[in-house]
Image 1 (cartoon, rainbow, N blue to C red):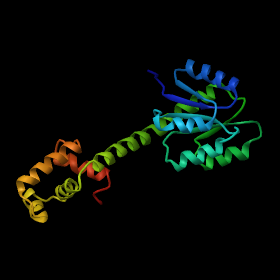
Image 2 (image 1 turned 30 degrees about the vertical axis):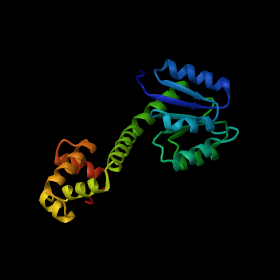
Image 3 (image 1 turned 135 degrees about the vertical axis):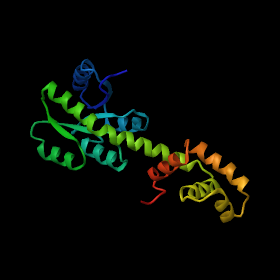
Image 4 (image 1 turned 120 degrees about the vertical axis):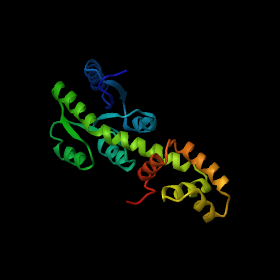
Length: 205
């Protein structure tokens, strides 16, 4: 288990990958190397949250295109871009597309590790809340249409009787639906169900 988090290095230069692997591994990060942005993007859905360190100039999908694609996917991964000498316009473009920062090669080892640590620290809460939101959305999606109607009744403050009357079914049947809703939504109480509904955007403030 790594202490400082995951780093995904994308660079088509094998020597650069090796030196970054050595540096980051000895600094306590979990490192995964990719020789192209294509390979990284293919692996992305299965990767744990971490910081991406990518070269800006690569054959095929370059760093700028990588940023565009990550942005289109609403990826929460922070991205640091490595640029060659004199690539400032590219670096500015990268920042506009959401890169957290850029480093000009050759760079100080300490500067890179500090930047990665701060990028992970800043992006982690958002990534965590994004994962929670997706989890809650999946729970809502697992409800049948009728269970969803019952949930909407419950969070609107209606009693089982009133919900039963609205849909012309027996209160006893509503109790069964209600129990299913609580189980599928993993809610221990009505207040927790309301909180989950708020997170899922089912309750307008």
